[in-house]
Length: 462
Ligand code: PA5
Image 1: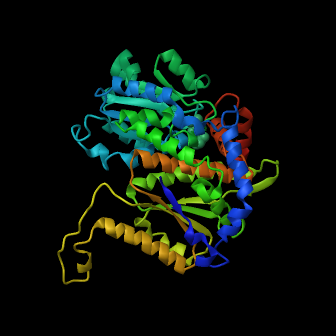
Image 2: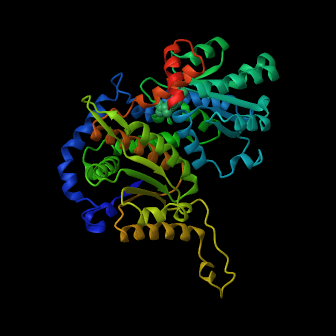
Image 3: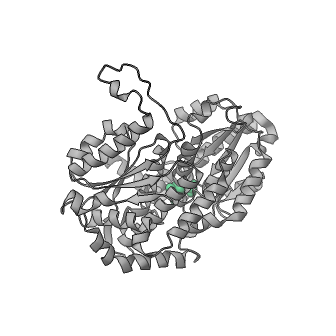
């Protein structure tokens, strides 16, 4: 099981102004946390609560269906191309970057054991879309269009471009090269997929995009790439069981949520940095940033009061960002809580050769890069404590299917608990809608004529 070390958030280490009396806080919030965890578990099956992501570890039917599809198309495609944005892409990127052999797309087919390359198009930069299309052989590419709403402009415009090209290149056979992952019943993509006869997968009801990584949204690409989705399921289930514990002293998601919340509310530390010391976990930070930002950044609380809450999430990477962000974290405003992720065992042990012995770099010879990265994690943590900067560390034994699932599921539960502490709805995103509507208006979508009118006058002044 992954662990959380929160010692360096204690006032005994970083001082009263910057740290918490955790024994007292845990006692004071004991009942609040107990109620939050009980509520989450009791409400998870109720429609409209958006908590179905808590059941994804148990969806054996989906796992079976996904595996069957993966074995059916095994060896047929050289490339998987995912079209999706936000929650439809970030989880997939995080997991594949963590679990596939580094530089996967550069490996030969044999080195990839005949599994395909993977590409995510999660933006609408025309140059990068064209660039990707120039290097992909669409005949040998399986495109997976992922959108829960089925109408997201970024994803659907990419789909329209690629569908058109595929049809031109492949004739009627193009349908075999497209799958759609979307809502079971509603949305434009659902309608089109049914009309066109694409293979489809379902984003289950009451699972929001940023909580969907362990639904078919992630499982389909993971299985197509040969990742062990049974181990992913075990990781989620074991973590889910551990996080059902209502005792804050035993529940790391509750501890992480409460510490983040108190750091913000009591001590004004409203920036939450996630800094893994592992390149393979770099994109877990990107995923976390979206999860934390869209879930917790809210104007109105559950009582309808205007609160404008939400800590600002920041992604960082150790050791790289020691040479970029750490100067600010040590000496700049003391307004952050930094959470490190430390990997105990890497797949590779890389020795530094004993050359240049009698020079200033001689001390490195004979050590391993593994020693170096963890020494840097330790020294950064201690240096930050010297500057009275609070930090926590998530400890992972190794980066594999089981542990990555535990880590990401734990962060999802932590987010849900934090949402309850802030007394906001962690599962909606009303703040994204306004710009979306303006885009529809600018692009001439029917029904948005009024917005278009309002927008035209504002564009001159804003
Ligand atoms: O977390 C979310 O709900 C969002 O980030 C969505 O995933 C994102 O807006 C894409 O939406 P959709 O899956 O409907 O295309």
